[in-house]
Image (cartoon, rainbow, N blue to C red; front, side, top):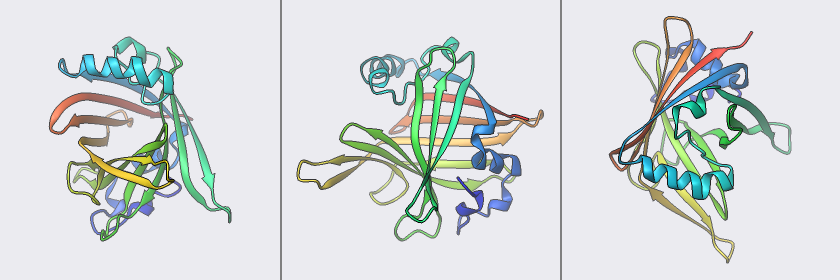
Length: 217
């Protein structure tokens, strides 16, 4: 995002978050990413099937299924999307596995405030055939300067994950889906930013991703 301060609202004072975490969100391409994945035994076969049938073909959400796939880290490239008047309306964040070359994520990131809410959310849009997956993440700060983003299970219109599909009559349909995500970012004793990302289906643990982000000179 162009400014971490854009997340300020009734549930978050950006000044409560460690400035190194804010720097990562404002200058993500300047940080080197390492990733470790931890799949639950129940979810691993499902994740492997999705990766084989969909992710590698669509070049989207190709998650690391084996620890060695992520052993060389990830590339990180940010491309700003500008509106008609030159303003930044979103940022495409592209990440590839260095070892395999597979696209791990290609998403459009921005800040949006849901109707009736006084707290801006992080919105992530992942393009899919005939639609997209849109995730709204609610931000909050920890007492230690850490940062949380949550996409819980809830009612329609609140933070969470939505599947958007374009119909043949050019209308859009939106359906809430039971993805439950939590990102926890903090600074470790070496000054690196760490992120723990847990993803659940309903309340069933599926995968945990652990990131280490190190600022490049």
